[in-house]
Length: 386
Image (cartoon, rainbow, N blue to C red; front, side):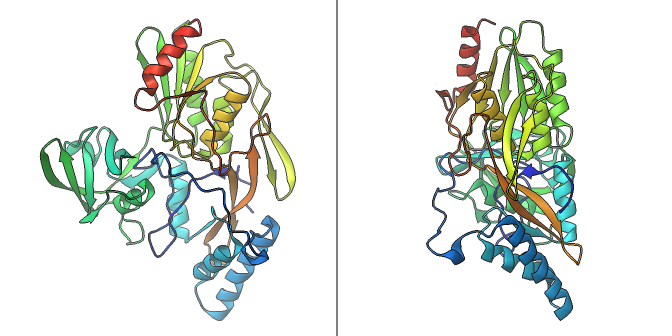
């Protein structure tokens, strides 16, 4: 097991259907409301129950070692072992795939620069990155994405649309093309875009209305926690903060804890277990505990973003506005395999400061809101004495 900080990651599409997804929000953020994982785990028999973390690591490593000795594929053998383990969040990467995953944690990705959400069974563009292939093609916020390389996307999970856009599982990479079917009002057309290596700004800051600063965090990549702290320090005196975590699919736990330190003066952020050993995560002292704060969440708020939301909610530091979060409260860490591939296996689950479990449940906001969530957040801030 690597000594790297644990991280929480979103669900991924397994090899065969599409290459393992890195971040659901790398190209498309905002999972459809209602795509929450079910609480049932299929535990009718002992064989269906997930293995203990230690046993799972041993089984996966042994399967890969035996495959090397037999001259067969270690990755495929490890995937079979993972499938038998019942670990719904585990995945196995080839060396090249894991390199892409690491790059995503650094805020880099291959794609066209689109963010979107599923709404009423349709895929709607919610953001277009500046200077990206999508922006150069004139794609706008509000456009409907109808197809990717001839495959219709209506009714499909957002994560599958991400996979199609990236070309996962087909060997596609930067420089390859993808054909998008689009719709804007009564106009329907196609655009052929060339995928590119892009750098993603996961933290964006803007001032709106009267003394309201919006800090949007798209994912917890390396350095994003410090960016949140810097944004809070630089916000105008007396300004309230809207921490927008909608569509944030998680990332590095350490970065989410650093972000929590922007709003808390030390204290507990979460507890979690690693192979049965209980651990605690604490904020650093010195955060701003007086600014009015609203956290925006939705069905695409996942993993490390839920960890942060739960801490702010439990400790009475923020009013949470939006819709119920995804419900992914497990922690993964990497296990190197003999051929250089890597298995990401679940090692434990985290709980909020009050002891709430997030996995399979999600977090319920203090105030329900959908399309007008940002406006509701401004109203809440006005009532918090900003």
